[in-house]
Image (cartoon, rainbow, N blue to C red):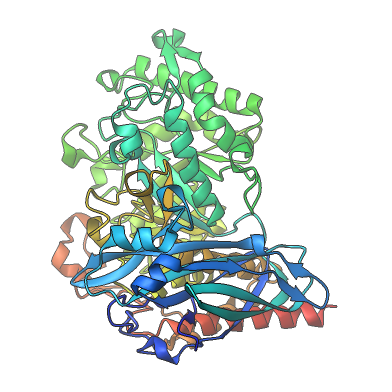
Length: 602
């Protein structure tokens, strides 16, 4: 008798009751799912994910093992080595145990008893079920067609199970390079503060330990079709070692004295070699923050003087020259001013300007960088702003100077004309918000990339992605809204990142978004309209629901807006109350649309 269950990737199962965690789920119990066969569909050059739920008994825990087999089709084979397995870790979220952290199968100290050792550390009270997450990668050269294979499962000393996995591989192929940017933002050097293996090593930059750990986070983000975006300076303008090159001299004699540590830190990200041997390949980072700010390279004490301008301009020119000479031509380097005067370090807001008297910062720093910002040759250095309060007033005013806009998700949704204007001016436009909390439906994570496609924006950003909190094994900080990763050093002795289920859901959605966006750009705007209609239909919302209209209070100047006004303001909450399975329907509908179009062109 088969006692394990195969389940799709859009719901999670309670380890105590076996019920579906998502209140909105179309199914309430795992008993409705197959015990023996799972049917999957996937494009090529993509991951497809599913889960295996097993009973939590002493016999199963001690003897459990799983051996995936190759999947065989009429024209080829998907090797068993394309599987990646993880044990799900349960966190206590608002009184419930919900899985999010994923422990790689047999990694670190779990190698001998991978399921039992994780479950023992996790120590969920009254646990009756354990779960595995399985990723299966479909290589780009896999011939389209039907494939079948098996999972051989050891459930006890004399108990074995065999589950079938069948997959329909589509003609469509997901591009290696992302077209939509999923930006996982964070702030230097949060990793050193939060990783046990770095925190107590004062030589971590000099001995290379930091670089080895950080690179694993960048690689994991890259493999999940995301960009780890690490702001190098604090609100004071100070920076950790290696996040900016060494300087010498003053005034017109200021220059970079040594690029070696900076290049050691960033060079492999910028030529793509850091991502060698990943499924997506050696693609350089699409974006990187520059260290330039109010207090670097010039001392803010000289702000407004000729000396300040001379130093800032000269060093920016050296950055452009060095990046060009190094051949780092595939990355957009961002001049971004993140300072906020509420921290009482500087008298201006460089980030999310709210008061009209702070607008001068945009003009002053554009003037300082204009020569480099307007160059058409060599490395690409662009002026970026994160905009919220004044987006409605600023997009026309500054589109000619600021070419990268990251706009508050809620406020930006009130101004579809603003995004259209920026795109028409050749600007790159993203939205920003937070990651979904662990207790929220996975649909909230999965729908984000498709909403970006429907809106016609270039990407979206989670403002913090590496703050898991000191007690993350039990209760992650902000219920997970500030992290998409977890540290492996304090739990299984692996000095690197652990992925989250939400990161997997985001990657799977990004595959669909990138494939869809590539298809759309062949024939705008008709194809975007067709995709937007499918998104609305699948979610059961009206067309253009991602543009919810404007609140009355935007007639007031932004400095008169108060928090209570936002409670009644229009919001594009597309996923709330919707079944997470609706994303499965949307994903398949988009693939059918793309496959039909490809078939008609053959």
